[in-house]
Every structure is written in structure tokens, then in C-alpha cells.
Image (cartoon, rainbow over all chains, first blue to last red; front, side, top):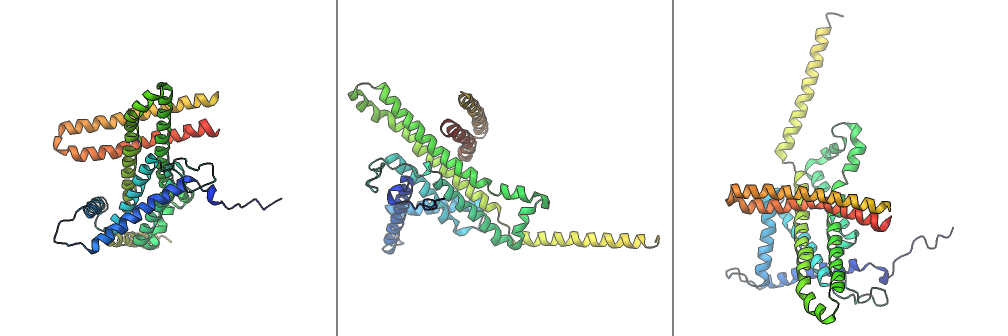
Length: 280
Length: 71
């Protein structure tokens, strides 16, 4: 058996172009954040903000308000994560629709081909769905402590294997939702362009009419679909994470109820024993 | 041949999702008609629940693409 080819490290040209688009989206977000930070230093708080500062203030305020109304006051700093998640999904969809030429991989087959939407590769939606998974379990562990492990044996200990499989269902559904949407948009847009190719047999007519008709398709399948899916993704993340939160009072109450139940059981056992004693 | 029959069945399932989505829209329109001041809240909830229902159609699409190209 030849093990030399068992593990082959990908070269730069083997990297899927989706990863490059994702890195570009992240770079755009990082540059925007740095610009806002630089502007904030010379910002006079007495004047109303203008330009990019105003946009940033509105966005952060919107995300914070959404988090406040969906998750409650316990998740005060969660708006930042939700904002970056939403910006990442939206900018990725927009980049897939602009189609920057792939100038980063000279020598590969995909040189100068348009960079695709990162979510047409299953790895990208899976990675952000895994982040949501991490947040869900991190929140549960943080607020429930050792009581976190009780979720695997509910309602009985027999349900352990079922619970171990159920644990992954949000990851699967979030991944496939985003992936399927991006892929469906890509397929339909490609189909429409192919249809134009057959419909407009004269080059001049095609050049005149395609720029008028294609934006409608792009508007629905890239911009609108992206916005809806980013809303759904952020909502599901917020709801799933907020469902794991237990306030300290609730935790204390649950503990008290459990102790009461145990005491009641013990009392019943004692009374049964005392009732059974004369008979014996 | 069999995979084309399977794709046809998948398209029937997509039609069922269409019925479900239209039910969502119908109820939302009814509630807007009954209480027009709540239109803003109903609209946002409508769009989110539409997205959730649509995800079933998207799962079917993923399965259909897998059937068409992978098998």
C-alpha cells in the first residue's frame, strides 16, 4: 500500500475560489470596522454623526435593539456577533452577484473566472452553523453549570443516543438552508442567462435587452434572497441561544422543587415503613 | 429513468410547499385586514415564517440536485 498519496496538502491553486470570496468579505468588514474606529477618534459627540459613522450607528443600534427584543437583557453584548454575522452573509451574497474576476490563482483552471458566492460551497455555511452550535452549548454550560449534561438524558436515560443525534439537527438545518438558497439562486440565474442566449439570436438585441432584464433576476435571487436568509439565520441563532438561558431565580427554583420532591419521596417511604411495621 | 421519476416526485413535494406558503400568506393578509395597525409586525413575522417554510423547498432542491448529478 502506498501511503504517499494518502494525505495531499492542497497547493494555492487547489483552494476552492469560494474560500477566497469569503476572505474578501471578511477583509471588507474588517476595513469598514477600522475606518469607523479611526473616524470615531476625531468625532465630536455634540454634533450629529454623518456619513459612515451615521450608518454604523444605525446598524449597531438596530442589531442591539433586535437582540434586546428577542433575547432579553441577559445578552447585552450579543449584538456585535449578530451584526458581523449578518454583514458577512449579506456581503458574501453581494460579492457572488458582482463576480470579481479571480486574479488570485494564476495558473489554475479558474483563473479570471468570476468568484462565486461562498455559500455555494457547503463548508462556508457549515462553519457559521458550527459557530451557532458553539454559542448554544456555551450559553447552556455557562448558565446551567453541571445541569447542562441533564439535557442528554431527558426524559429518560434510554434517550441518550437519540439526544446525541438530535443535538446536531440545528447545524444541519442551518447549513442546508443557506447552501440550498445560494445554490438555487446560482442555478436559476445561470438558467436565465442560458435562456437569453437562445432567445436573443442577434448579438445587438441581446446586448440591448439583457442589461434591462437580468437585474430583476439578480435583485430577487441574490439581494432579496440573501437578505431573507440572513434574517432567518440571525433569528434562528438568537432564538436557539436565548432558549438556553436560565435566570438564577429559575435555577434556584428548579433546585428547590427537586429537593422538595426528594423529601416528599423520603417521607412517603418513611410512612410506608411505619405503616408496615405493626404487620411484621 | 428511475431518477427522472424521483425528480418528478420531488417537484410534487415542492408544490405542496407552495400550498403551505400560500396558507401562511393567506393568514397574514387576513390578520392585516382585521387589524391594519399591526401590519408592520405581521409583515416581519410573515417574511421570517415564509423563509422557514421555504427552507423545506430548499431541502427538496438539494435532494433533487443530489439525485440529478450525484447518483
